[in-house]
Length: 404
Image 1 (cartoon, rainbow, N blue to C red):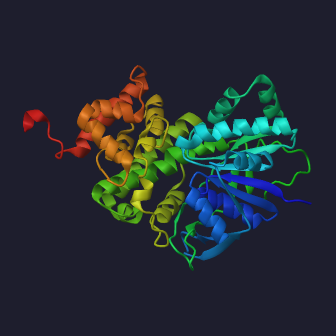
Image 2 (cartoon, one colour; image 1 turned 90 degrees about the horizontal axis):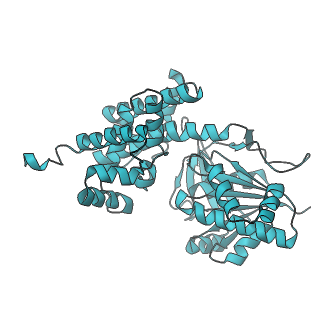
């Protein structure tokens, strides 16, 4: 019996380090990586393997997984890309939001190819990405590109399912001569929405943790775990630190980030009944951030700051929810303000934020970066709070003209 085909769209840290490693260890799957990085695809194809170091962040125990036997497709080769997608039983996406439109477009084209070829075997599209409303976005984008007949075919044979890919994975540098090696934590399950299209008797991967509430779990992850992680990152960047460990060991930064996290958790509890973790769970969370076995670089955490500051993401999402629930997001907006107050010449979006502040002023820069609609009461309040926080964090570096 021919193994089921899996196409992993995005061969970066999550694509290789979590999806690729889990499917490989499961066995019985023919894995194809698809990526826009032609050099990465050529390099992986030539080397024929890569290594994932899986670390227990509390004990430091390490195991290595050598992933091999995969295929690589350059997405610029549209025909080969579509052919791989058309023959897959599983498609897993691991891309940033700026690539969502392109991925949705090719998935719509895949539906047409399957329809033309008469491929009526079901396909599960496992959506990965730190994004609130992931399935709704792709559902709308794909259906909007299809005809009525194509939409009916997609509804009958394709299912979209949000996953919570929550391994911390970074580039490891060379490991035993492997320049594509990755290192990350040792999470061995992938929460996936329980809406797969397969019939009775189909063997799903054993690492799938099927759950009807993954979308809500994704909100919890982004608006609490990602919130504290990025709070440590932004404040650490302003302080000149290089790793999240240094930031969390700064008692002021560690405390402020935890206060921001707690505001977000209170809002999640109030709005969705997601219970705030107990003291023991909070202690474990902080120990994992400060583990001596994994040094997450600030530059990685704060990359693409404009995306992370946008409405709905890890700062403005919980801040606006707080306001709706009658909770003042004092510490959340101060953590977010640090994203406006550092500049890394190696990170184009931080340079663009500095340019906007210089040319448009703080008020307009905050509105543009965060994509806020000031006609909406909660968003206007969040804007006013964040503008004030940016001025406070930047003081005395930015002195008002009247005081110069």
